[in-house]
Image (tube, rainbow, N blue to C red; front, side):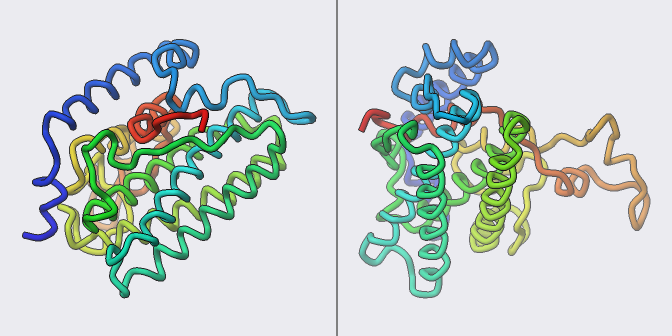
Length: 274
């Protein structure tokens, strides 16, 4: 089947190396950002280190630079995809060009907010060292688009608490977050025909990554959580008995920590000093 090329065309050895690297980074992230920085000297974590914008607390500047790199990654990905000859069929082109323009607007907004404290745009490698070929294989392009968008939604959610000291910035970040969620839903619905989930499903069930490569699993880890504010959602009454674990997990979306996000996107960042 044509859509299976996203799995069949990937080098297992490369994916294994990526998974091992990411696992090591996630373990390092659990010990704190300082250790993560030491482990990933050229990764995302190094980009937002030590920035101080006048009038904005240092930790808020760091979060904004963290968001900026994610937005730069998405904007570049869609810009290259839209420019790749024959990649995106006419039926889907408006969707991806619109998302590209949204991501560019996010980049410009964050750079304007940060001013001279904005980090430099990194150099990206969307093949992740040869594991992917998203600009010649449309199925892979769509799969990475889904993984990037789902990561972005969870990443913004994970940083909301760090922006409580700057309410105006938090409000702005939340306006971006909701747009990223709409992007994710649109791409997931487009990809419904090659995932293991039901067609046209715009939300995440448990930790199911569908037919995306195994290397994308950390994007969905944790989504199987059924407990919110100490309440097991799966024990609540539904239309016919208690809710299923699937329905309970779909009803709530989980955040990703900064270290988890850094580990996910690091394979796509070549040089943060570009």
